[in-house]
Structures are given as C-alpha cells and as structure tokens.
Length: 79
Image: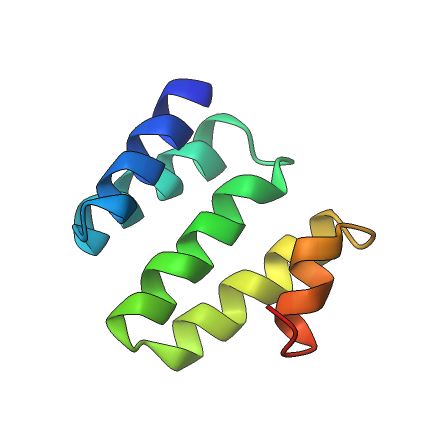
C-alpha cells in the first residue's frame, strides 16, 4: 500500500491525475481500511473536476477516519 500511495502522490504532484487515481485506487484494494487511499482518490477526482466522485471518495475517507483533521477540514471547506 505504501508504494502505491507514494506512486499516487508522485503522479499527483506531476499533474498526472489519471495515473494518481490508478495508484490511489490500488491502495484501497490492498488496504481497504486505510483512509489515505480514499483521500487520494478525492484529490485526484477534485483536480479533474469530477465533483460527484470527489464527494463520494471524501465521504468514504471520513467514514474510515472520522477524527482525521485534514479530512474534516476538507469537508468543512477549511483546506
């Protein structure tokens, strides 16, 4: 999961949101209880303008990590 997350982050930073989405999705497959993959999916979809998909992903991340400040702040519009 860590390698996929790192690869997703690198692709995201490079502006390759489609490839980032592939890696972040893989994180959710190999570590289904880890909210970071869902947060990455949110970021990629948000960057691509896919609001409904981004909203769904951030809701999933929040359900898996309800106390995470970055996720909470994103939902409240603070990030």
